[in-house]
Length: 256
Ligand SMILES: NC(=O)c1ccc[n+]([C@@H]2O[C@H](COP(=O)([O-])OP(=O)(O)OC[C@H]3O[C@@H](n4cnc5c(N)ncnc54)[C@H](O)[C@@H]3O)[C@@H](O)[C@H]2O)c1
Image (cartoon, rainbow, N blue to C red; front, side, top):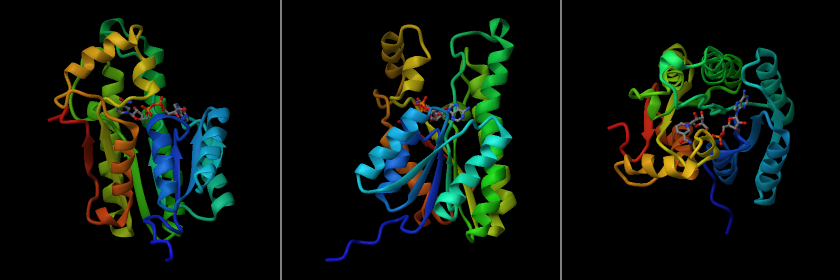
């Protein structure tokens, strides 16, 4: 019996921050549904490892070392994707950092604010800016930006992070309007607390903090990277063809 057609056969998906956590899970999920996956992130060893795992599983993938805060690097990322796979249909702009999530604003460090904004806001803005011309050349496609439950509500001691994730939603809605009539949909996924390095490395007493945060989640558990990846695939696929400019929470009702 021939293989059933997969959701992303013939498509190319670019994932920033695709060598770890949510981005890595998305890479596996896209490749498992037939996409050729370009993984873009800073750390090359982890990036090459991610590619090796996807190839091992029978998928197709490549890695390009990228710093999303740099325009030259983002342009090189898109160029590498086209050079390798010839087109770009889907982008998951996922790279992000938490910065300092333990300090009230009066004591917060200005350099950390700048760094969080550079990665989480400028990085998404630059990514969309240079991805969109190639997605247009491919006849249209879909962008999914990674916001957070922190883009949907406020939270103490993390003002830079919360501001950056609100900004991701502002850009998502604005760019969705710009390209709505040109066959590019732009949506955002808003993960809740997801079990990745990002949450365990951000705190001094990681396990203790995790237990405290988990108790505040209505579903009484953290999410898995694969649960976010499933939502990203849906937003990037024709199954969500009339969903545009949306912010989809994947957070066990945290933002309700
Ligand atoms: N884990 C959570 O609980 C959670 C919750 C809400 C939102 N998010 C968001 O999900 C996204 C992925 O986070 P994660 O939890 O998988 O964390 P992670 O730390 O495992 O992954 C972050 C990825 O971003 C990459 N990255 C960071 N700075 C970069 C830069 N300048 N250039 C290129 N790549 C860069 C890292 O290399 C890594 O691949 C982030 O945007 C994060 O804010 C995570």
